[in-house]
Amino acid sequence: MKGHKNLSRRERQIMDIIYELGDASAAQVLEKLPNPPSYSAVRALLRILEEKGHLSHRQDGPRYMFVPTVPHKTARDNALKHLLQTFFDNSTEKAVAALLDLSEDQLSEENYHQLLELIEEAQKEGR
Image 1 (cartoon, one colour):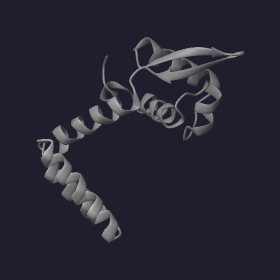
Image 2 (tube, rainbow, N blue to C red; image 1 turned 90 degrees about the horizontal axis):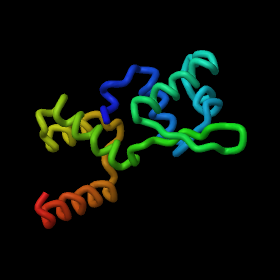
Image 3 (tube, helix red, strand yellow; image 1 turned 60 degrees about the vertical axis):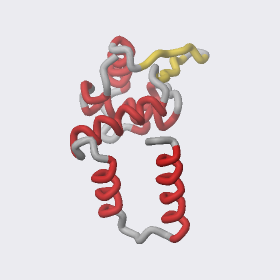
C-alpha cells in the first residue's frame, strides 16, 4: 500500500476528512471539502481511493460508508516518520525544537512537566 505522499491534493483532503470522522459517506465528505467539486466527482475520488487500497466501504442503508484501511495511529506514525526524514534529518530533537518555535504561547508549567514525563518514560523504555 502506498502512503499519503502518493496521493493528489484532493485525495489527501478526502483521506484527512475520513480519518477525522472515522467513516464517512460521499455527502459528508463533500460537505467538509474546501471548494468542493461535484458530488459525482467526490464519488469518483472515493472509488479511486478504494481501488488504490486506501479505503474500503460498507453498506449503510442506501449509502456507502467509507473507512480507511490503515488504522489512524499507523497512518499518523507513518506520516510523522516521513516528516522527520524529509524535513528534520530523522532528528526528533530538531522536530521538537521546530514545534516549540512555532508555538504562539509559552508552555504552561503543566505542559512542561507532561513533556518531561514523556521524555523520562521514553528513556526508561530505551527510545
